[in-house]
Length: 190
Image (cartoon, rainbow, N blue to C red):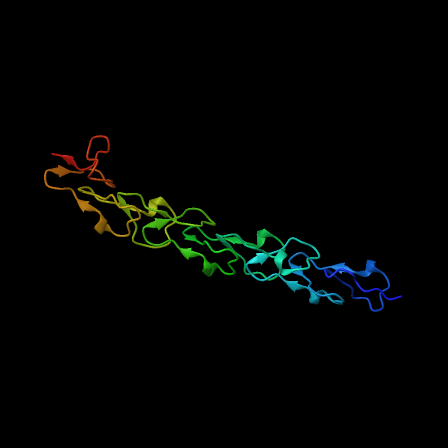
């Protein structure tokens, strides 16, 4: 008596098979949505940007999306290790990204030293960064002596304002004229 593989998730390559023991599950990273399949090529691979650890999957819904901050270019990935992290200086808030092009450069005035970042961190007040893709706070340039800035995430030197007449700043990276005191050593009275 001829037996058909009963589960949607399995296939048999033996003609005239008479036992369910000849049925084989689709591999992790793939799924099968029909019965009577005769070849592993009948199993559909999870799409790039996703993976599945499930053997014998009956549905595309077992293909899980790579988490935000990562991407995968692989078809049929069988684990989350196939999801590569976005590089430092880039970020992505997209789940299921299928290319490194989904990782955007941090804009001028921001940076991230972390791989797999979801957001970029703004340069602190008293600093600015003119380039995009910053990988560390050290990429933020300090305002020069005689100036201050209270802007966070500044992307050019024009945010560094001159101390007013009768005040001075001897340090670099001064943060705010509002708290001009010895505590912050900012634009101090002459």
